[in-house]
Every structure is written in structure tokens, then in C-alpha cells.
Image 1: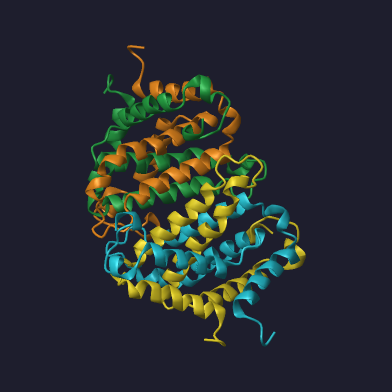
Image 2 (image 1 turned 120 degrees about the vertical axis):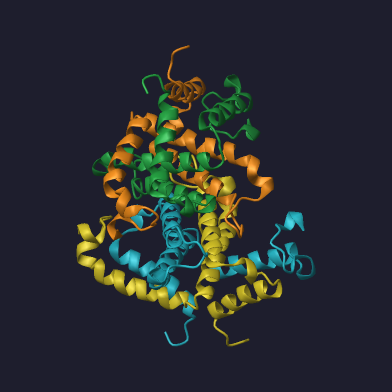
Length: 115
Length: 115
Length: 115
Length: 115
């Protein structure tokens, strides 16, 4: 395990956690996608009624846990379809670097179609 | 770069992509959380009107890209709060291993409070 | 009040409920839209992990309350922009009747662009 | 039709629109709840990247249509379970008037459990 990549390692741990509990029977991808959406909403809920777009102090400690939930279901869905999330994200950024050239997009929030 | 951890490496790339475009001015955490939620909904949208809980074949190729978007905003929020996502998820699974002991939870979809 | 339209009457009650509590200061439209999204997620949560796409019996009684929450924030947003929801929906259905002619769309779940 | 309640009238129109297209076969409640959630996200998307919590001018005209979509799926779910949305909302406000007495909640955004 010493030399194992940290990302591979957590992907494997997520898989083993579910396998040990025989939970794959519940994990059709539509239910996984619903869970992902619900956890993303719990992240958003931390910002409900904030006026200054910053989180309330007493909610600050809940963020790592809520983001971990989103990350968990993202990995679960990726595992279901044998997707390597790191490659998928590298591809996405490759594509966004072309869509958003630095000289055109610097300091602007426009969508690439409006640059 | 040879020996750099693959996860640290993508977290760094996400940060550099935004820094180069001077986009941090738009990235208050409430807007990040909204973007995360919207991308999670786009994942869910791939399953809209499916009857068998499987994705339609013609949508299958869109999954890596949509999951990458969710992963991107998860990293963005984690970066904003200096959270190490891998540690956060390991902590979460540590806690879930206690909440869901294998002998009690095997083959059941109950919440831990109902085990 | 005897002859007042039932819909106008509830729209008015929602407005008075908030005005009496001086809550409009919190109700910028972005926060209203977040609340609407969060309540829609609570409706969806009732269906999490269901296999047959039907709600679990013990959750059935929560539906009226959760739908009422969604309805509440929909009215709040409509009030903010002086939108008559009934007219907006009639316009929408007018438009969908043109997009989805009965003879072309009967028994099909295709989007109008694919009919 | 002259004397028909405007709300009953739109609920009926929604039902007839679907019945004429034989769409109830697709409308299991889990799919309805997903559609409701997706439309609520489209409302939220109008506020993405706004800094002042107000909608961008060029998006303003899309609000009635997006709110109509949310309203449509709310009615669809209510119809599925034979719920009268107006009664459900009146009940909800009755309950909130008790949870949030005017003298305790005036000018405060606290949850009722924190009043």
C-alpha cells in the first residue's frame, strides 16, 4: 500500500465499504444520481439566507463533511461506469482552456459563447 | 512533477486555471455552492424519464464530462476553505464504518438510526 | 372575502404572513430561488432509494407538506416580480400545445425537438 | 366555465393536457419529483454568478416561464396523490403562524427552533 496513489486508494476504499455491506443491489445509477443531487443541496443549504455570500460561522465546521458526501457519490457514479474521475477532469480542463483563452477571458464571468 | 501525487496535481491545476483568468473575484462560496448544485442537477437530468433506472445509450458518453463538472466545483469549494477532500472523505468513511457495522447493515438500505 | 378567488386569496395570505414578520429584508430573489431549490430537493428526498418509483408508505403523509413548501416559494418569487402564476402557466401550456401536437406526441416521451 | 374557480381550472387543464397525450405512463411520481427538482434548478440558474442577488436584466423575461415549469410539476405531483395544493398551503401557513409568532419572529431570520 505504501506506494499506492492516494486517489486510487480512496476510490478503492469507497468500493470496499459498499461491497462489504452488499449494497450494490440498491445502487442503480438513477438512485446514485439522486443521492449526489441531494448532497449537493445540503452543501447549498449551508448558505441559505446568508447576506454576504459567506457561510455562517457555526456552519463552517460542517463543510468538510458535506463536501465529502458529494465526493463520495461522485466516486460511486464514476465507479459504476468505470470512469476515472481524474482523467475526466483533466479532459474537461483541456477543453476549457481552449474555450476560455486567458487573454479573452481574464477578469470576465461571461460564458465562452459570449466572449 | 514525476513524483507528485495525482490528486494534489489536479487540485493544483484547477487552482491555476482560475488564477490565470483572475476569476476568484466571482468565486464567493455561495456562488460556488450554487454551481455545484446546478452541475449535480445536470447529472440527474441524464436520468430524467428513464424507466429502468439506467441511462439512455445516447446519453452515456456525457457522463464523464458531467461528473467532471461536479468534481471541479467540489474541488473549488474545498480549495476555498483549505479542505483536503481526501482526508474529509476518509474521516467520513471512518465515521460511517462505525454507524453501519457490517453485521447489522449487510444487505439493508436502512438509515443507521433505523438499524 | 366571500367572493374572492381562492388563488388570489392564498397569494395574499403568503404576502401578509411575511409582511407581518418584516421578513422582506431577507427575501432577495437569489435567496428565494435557493429556498425553492432546497424544498424541491426535499420532495425528491422522499423518493430516495425507492426501487419501484413509488414512495414508501411511511413517507406518504409528508407529501402535502413538502409540496406546500415548494408552492410557497414559487408564490414568493412570483410576488417579488409581480408575476401572475396562473397566467404564466396558461401561457406555458398554450406554447406546449403548439410544441407537442396531440397526433405527433401521443404516447411518446420525446422532447419536442425530437418528435 | 364562467363561475369556475381559476385554480381548479388550471389544475384541470394540466390534467387534460397530459391525458390527451397519453403521458401518464411516463409519470410515475419519482420521475415527476425529478422533473420538479430540475425545473427548480433552472430557476436558480438564472441567479448564477450574480453578485448583488438580483437577476441580470437579460434573464428577467425568463422568470415567468421558469416559474410556470415549477408550478406545472408541483400540480402534476399534487394531482398524482389527489392533494389539493391550496389546502396543503393553508395548512402549512396555519402551522407556521404558530411556529413563528409575530412578536417573537419579527425582523429575525432564525429558525423557529432558535427563536
